[in-house]
Length: 97
Image: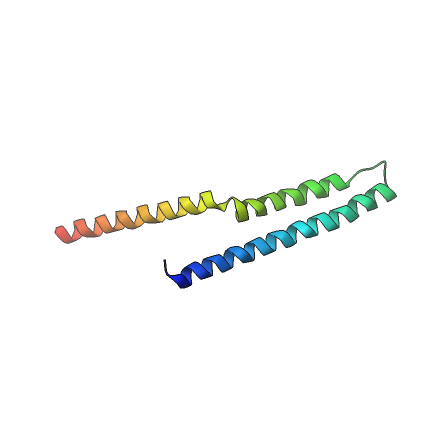
């Protein structure tokens, strides 16, 4: 991997981190307001938990993509190497015959 490729990968990762932290901040601020709104206007009917769970699930998926993606990335790299090796072996066998 060249220096330029490493720099581009790092830049993409930093962008993903930045987007995650913005997403988290929006989740906290907006949902704090929604919790307050729900408790002030309809304390006997709590609906805000649906928003918290739905958006929270999206936030968890986002977090996995940003912080837990190493597992998937390693699998992708392994699979790519496997397929390249298989194609090279096929090409070598074809050239022998």
